Image 1 (cartoon, one colour):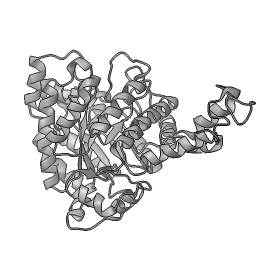
Image 2 (cartoon, helix red, strand yellow):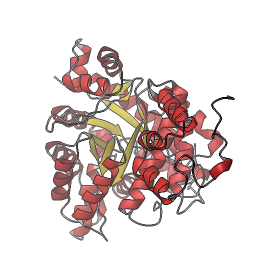
Image 3 (cartoon, one colour):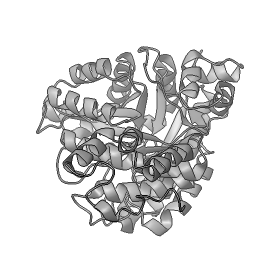
Image 4 (tube, one colour):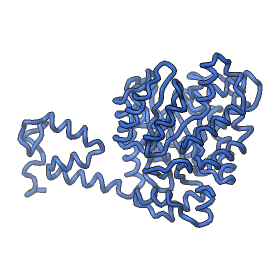
Length: 425
């Protein structure tokens, strides 16, 4: 039985109980949310997670960190260091998006070292293999694409992104009305070109039942990828994006029927004023499935600071109902990220997620902030460090202020607004 079929039968699997208890949720309530499709607990049956987590169902907003090699830079040790940094900074999940080097070796090693849910995009492996062999991408076969999903399942991947909504119909919309920024999803772009070159339907859409059977066999959560997400604010909400969204909504119901946990991926680049509307539309269209957003980035001109543009959009999206934020690093659009980029990306998205948790009334979120406010009032510097989202950074910044009067900081010194205030306020 799959996790979904177990909870529908009234059981609470151990992994669901662990995910619930990690954040003050009643296991039975989380199980009910999984049963009705509004939550998921990505957990492969080929690997035992040390830190399972829930997405949706009243749980706190989760943060994912992408790592992985490229064709130009393929250093496993560097990716393992990024994994370590992402975990140290509190990432709830990690995706291996490697396209260079021995992809299966890289994936297996990351899997061994990753105690949290691990995701991947199997079709990357298919087209990377063709590129390195000098074969045109149009020569890929549906059988090869589905076999990649199976291999990732065998390797213990917990959730897979599959771009099932990039159909022949939506490709025709793209060709009729070209976008400003084009198709920025690697998987979506490759499948769109494959469809156009072969005049065939997307195998992941056409053979969706077989894809579901693979996911169910390995207990992989299906992340329905936004292959046509807008890569520029000017493209947000266009016909291609909405057409794909409606298709994904139909596939959510088929996945639930098959006993496969499912979440849906969303944009992308979206102007700030449109984010709430888009998230609500996406939630309705996809039957309140857990929603996983990349950003969204609220401006296209923050190169070098895209993690900040991402955090702004992520907070608004999560307040509106998004359940899972995929981080963006300062290197986005520019180069492969470094470990320091990963740290900044995770922390920016964690801030956004926590801000949304407070607004959503997630248990413990406001209490955390209240404890910090009290520590600041008391000028309890050690407690402030301990309560910080990034204690290492807080400790470093405080140390840089020393030597100084230990009861204050170098910003205000004896003019500290809180000093000697206890008798007045």
